[in-house]
Picture 1 (cartoon, helix red, strand yellow):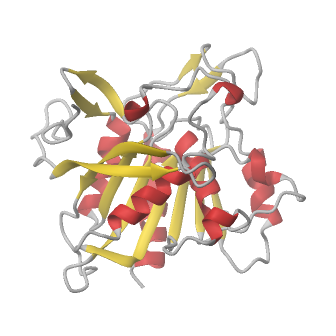
Picture 2 (cartoon, rainbow, N blue to C red; picture 1 turned 135 degrees about the vertical axis):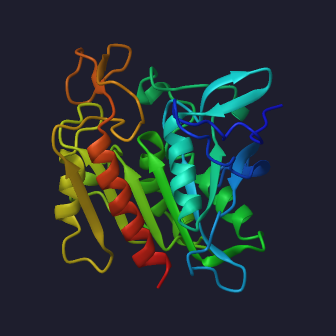
Length: 299
């Protein structure tokens, strides 16, 4: 059994350890809308650390955060999973800012650690079928007494960010009929290609902020630029922020820039992909994200 309690207390070297986050594992049931197949999942639930004046009758805005193709954990040992530095950093930033956060785990309950090396055709857990995991997460958070159901946002990285796009698209019937819709969404370096063509319908259910590196050769930003252009004049805001000299995974703390030859990149087929952190871009992206969420959820 994986447990999240007590694994979210890591600190940077030579610094005082921050207080541990109050995290617990919760059960989710993802139901495939086409076949009705139910899958037992779980997630990590972290409650808002402080309100900063945004609580309403003890209820707080809530973010559902979707991991990328590398999964939620950096290591699993003796039945315990440790968050990656990226997920831990985001958990702290959001909870400190007054947001509850739910991290659904789409991989471990399905017997997978990572799908990064798989081609899109090989992926058993696709962005499209992870929409049902999002539906399960939305259902679960709306049952929690400290969640303001009118202030829920989606957030994701890479594969999870592509899931955010799929989960927002009102052109899909299962999204359109959902009783609870997010009020905002943030996508870190998604693959925008499925929605970039003018002939492909894309009608987001909520304002969307996309954060990417200009030099991303894993999920190149050109397709997201095409979506931004395509959606100009629509009644739903789409904002794209591009950071110069920045690659995929730019918000991962302590990750050196390196080339991964085990991943088939979109931008440079056969040449691998570039991945690595950029502290300045990460800081700017966090600031844009928090300002965006505050504007959309704390109205």
